[in-house]
Length: 107
Image (cartoon, one colour):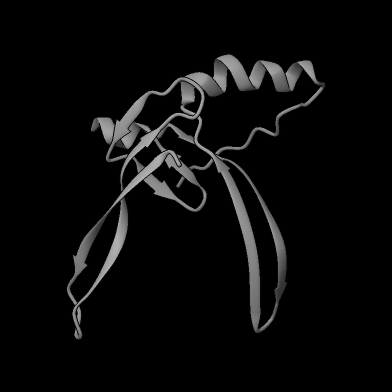
């Protein structure tokens, strides 16, 4: 597993804890990044370096079922740093005929 986690206390009554990412390692090049934001929709690799810029990747598949009152989905994530995404994964995808869907968020 390429995400190293640590347990932190959560101020609540009764007292509880939760796991948060402590570091993330790129599954391709092995680059270790401490304090990256690991979320369900990807990893913000840039946050760990203290910049205000976003540099987020997400390579994931989820399979299972969902109904109005319950769901069970198993995910498989690959943690790929932005450099490997742009220099290794994206050229391979394009060579296979894949065309990206570009979008922008602005608010």
